[in-house]
Image (tube, rainbow, N blue to C red):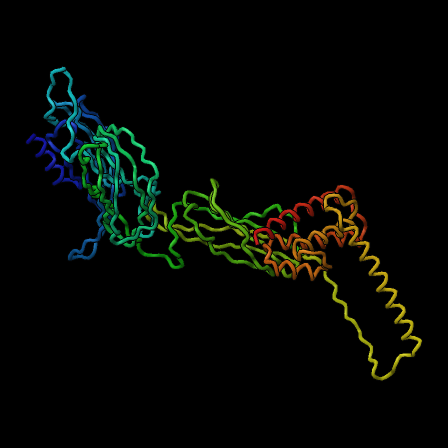
Length: 523
């Protein structure tokens, strides 16, 4: 034992490594072989699976790291410290070998921890000839927090950390009530109580465990921060004649290393913390609207895409206005849809732009170029006619002219009333049974009037827009209805569309009436 201790001391004196491991443990106890590397060149630490005797069981490993600045007479230097913990469990008494273990400190070299002997005491043979592990000295029950989410690299201020709190117990727990403390140098944004506790056997501790509480902790500054603790009262058994035993527990301590932002911070960095991301535009295959508008999608892919809560900023060149219509996140990444409303025929260009983000895996700033995307938009031609109003103050009209004009007005009004009466009769049927564009428009007008006004009123293009605004109908649905109205008017005024085109218009009318009925039912 003394020789191994002298060897570890010699290693510590001549290398940046420091090794710690107990010489003796008890049966059922969990212990660790800890290796620390303190070097400005070290960027990480790892090892392979160690070789152990039959009385020791390898449980797992954990790594952590921290960065510190040290002031010296010659100036300020940066010092990195990375720690590797190899955890073992003592299964049976005796003298068991541990190692050798190969340690790889990236950037600082390699280390071979030589084979050593660990003495396991306690838990002698019972009358039945079997050996059972002893309970650890921590008691019958305890609470252990665990950071289970994939942090995708180093933790910086503002990165959410999900913490699971587990209750370990060798007794039958019938009730648990708990409370959690506030976070120091951070904030808890989300808490979740597990509705039903499910017990599972833990091979590491030898007792059952259950997850009963989840919290999301967001650190507010750099440093070694303590995870918020949970206190609980645990009740055992189901005693009828006397009070059931209880335990008052406080969760084990747990810390997390939060790194400061690397220096220097590049100009234009907006605080985006990502691992790897690629941002690009793509044109959606939607039909061109009546005003020539098109739709585009902004895509963010890569491991850092789920952290994109807002669309990255980008530049737009051209006579167009962008309206965000939808957004979401799926297996392919985050996406945002925009409707491009042009004010004139021409080309609209998105980008190119440069996105600056922090690579949390390698602790450096990176840039990603959003390649430009261009679309050609052609708006519908509009004709503006000037109406000349004659000046009647200088010369009056003959009486016969007024008579002819009056008769003409009466004829026009009578014809309009007759046509409108026939149009209303044709509108009594359903939209789905219309046989030509004119009948479809009449019935479409009738159905819209019922849904928007509660009765049968005349609806022109302007009246329809006003009614839709008054009822606060969804913008996209309102535009779709007005576009179909214009399509029907164009089909009536121009050459009659083919049978397939007419059936498509009728199916679209039935669909929009159904959507409007659901929308008006909500409002």
